[in-house]
Image (spheres, rainbow, N blue to C red):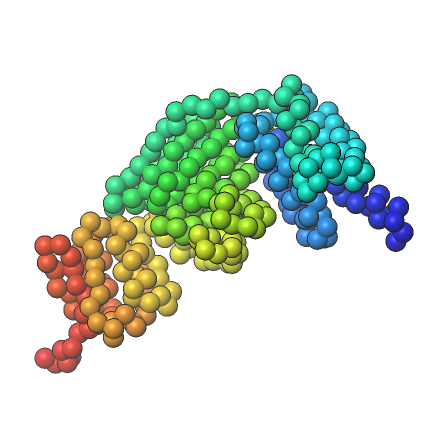
Length: 346
């Protein structure tokens, strides 16, 4: 391919990336659009690079003022942004010093957005609504748009719904979202520096300490790290059956998961699959005021697979002790689990 053909192909890819980004951010995209977008990305790595460039430029401007496209300028903005980005790309290539040398096309694209306030709506910041659960409590919340949020134990969320966008911050804990599709408002969840963008989806978000886990039950979400310490802020797209795991010292990891295990808490159960006892105890301790504590290395090495009910701590402990041949000793402040050293007939 000659140089001119390569340039034309690159421009065509940039145009497509801009159109996809504007469509997906506009709120008019359907689930079919999201699937087509995912296929478009998977076919060519250069498409991913072009889309990430557009996305980063948009977000750089969005950090100044929250941006939402007015419906009546949707088509015009695609053409305007596309033509302007192409012209500025040529200008940056010819006169890089005019844009500070190293800033490049991303800065140029950001300048387009910052210089076109007449095309944009800004959503005013309002005091968010706060919903929370205590240890062992679960609560269902129906939002103004008809979406529902099921809060798990010891969970706090901040909800801010405006005419332009629906934004929720998961401060701690775990929440299951069933989102009502809307054409004109995006639905975003933030947790531990992650931003989850959703369209007509059911998904679970869990933020325990610095570890965040996003599990998609139905539909598509986009997960992106907004942490300043994360040098790789490329968005990750998840479809049903995929899970993203992120912590402060690692990149986003995508893996498959068992939906019945992730949603077991909604049915009042713990589901464990060959989990080590320390992991099991940490999970159980999220739901009860009096903590369990393991005593002895031989106990910590035990593994367990099975279902345990979480409705009552005494029953939970009784079942765990019976299934793993443990002994429990309850004090005023904790329940200590040790290996059962008694022989069966003693």
